[in-house]
Image (tube, rainbow, N blue to C red):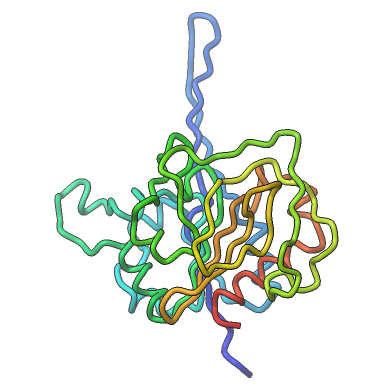
Length: 251
């Protein structure tokens, strides 16, 4: 039996602190949540060996070099800002010198790895430009140029994705109507990259090569809120993500 392909997913988690004010009195509650379930299920069903690092785990456990990342055929970054990978607790709290993990991602792709960045409030440039991937080594490896400011495009009325390259393996069998999305990050395809699908007039899926490897930029989310229930429950959802990961890994 052939070895199962391995994917590392980093991000797609958050913690919410709420203040409940009731007249004179108040109290706080804290909730932890993850948004990886649909993506993880799609890849597992496609035979992938999935390693998932929530953002707070990736802060410490994400590999420091291309050799560590080479254990995976594909690395996916979803809703995890550059600071989480740059500011390991030993650097932030103890001023310890450590390798730059954004450089490690670039080197991993250049050496033949597969990279997928998935949109959200804390990927690409993100809300208030806090994701901060513009001008980084990760941007070098991606097939897109990231905007310098807040790059979100909110579409509460919904935007219909449209396939622009029906022959690309990422969208094989998916040239029918797609469910609407509620937003995305705006970026520009680099020269030589392929715009596989669009959201309105903007690129939605862009694929390209970097060194010996490949990378894919998916402008919208893999789960709510930008990817609403009709999208994550769509019959094309799982094939789409399996084909994105597979193409990035060299299929």
